[in-house]
Image 1 (tube, each protein chain N blue to C red):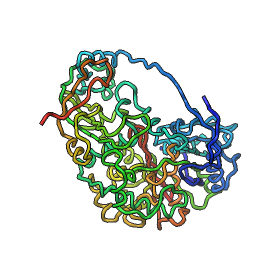
Image 2: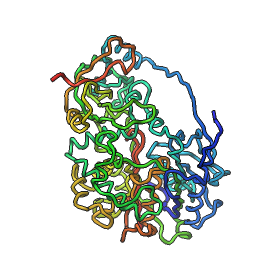
Image 3: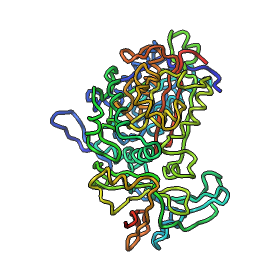
Image 4: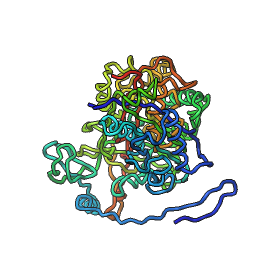
Length: 158
Length: 395
């Protein structure tokens, strides 16, 4: 849809896009989201490569064979990469917030989520608490809905 | 191996800036196409095929804009294709054009594109939409935050400081003073970078490239056309490209097959390009690199993965001045992506600026005695990488 108009100083035409979607979840993600409703994080694994995947995959991307089955990931893990966002980006959460790739116990790959409950007022000292290698645990919402936002990471209570 | 030799015989760039209001998107692309054709001494009729370099079109706001550009870049009646690998697009488009000439299919190919990243105020929202809705989209990933994550990991592995990244910005802006096309330029200090607003740890505003509008084009030709039209071409002696999973979480930790923070896909891409071009010691044999570096932290891992130095050493060489213009290795004499980032053509600008150095046409920013130059591009979730080796002589 294009709305015509003009800016005071520039000769421009204004436009906006509004597009709606319905994304099919499929079997693999469907099983993962069902697991979240029970406060479980389910990963797929490949017997041949001895690798386990989060997010779960139908196929092992190393052996190119179907994954052998499912395992329940540990609800604790280790930070592999983290950042603290202090800038406001269009259509993204209001800063500040922390995000991290965390490799959960028993899983070969890391999955991103928010790290909550950390004082972010001093960015540099907060960043020091999110160094790769730091252990974190998963905290679920009280009433999970089967979405990736059902959980987040928290630092262990000192 | 290629059947035919390929050279860059013409280069065209527009100025890169926040916005260019006196032209539409397609007129910008045309301006670069005309400049490249003029530089090559060719007319549109001399071009056999056109490759269009364009990444997401949501920035400039016309869906699949390549169709609008066809007539203006003189592709009507010719084979035409658009190439899109995110930020790596310009490098991938160049490789597609190269393959067309190297295969013997066409004598000449025009590779051209344009971008206008500031046409929308929602650029980082658009970039967030490249992640899947199931697992990653909700966590505020965009180009800034995704590379901040990799940079935090790089700093942890190699002990890099924020000041060491700031020195890259200072050098880039200084180099850009000699590039009439560059968007950001000037004499700034490490302190200026450190005092700029914090964005996403460890990035401050000055660690991050601008959103630019502008266009670029190169003319590629086979040996016969090159001989008759160009006395000092830039020969494409090697190309390498690698692709990796969208999931950055697969590329961290002990089970990763290519380490995210090292941009490790460049190891095998570089080896392939070096083997084609007969380069065994990059630091000795290559004089100029034009690296795809939208962030202050993007240069070091690339230089290490491409074999210019050991892991963790690029920061020390940078501190010692080894990457200044005319020093051990001239890194981004144009000012690089940190100073101008028209995303859909940035990889092509890297090739164009590297070619200008080999052709002796880089003006005030010319480095003396350039025998070999290397350009790179990176796209997606740091998942598409490619590199190109340009030489003063055929290998």
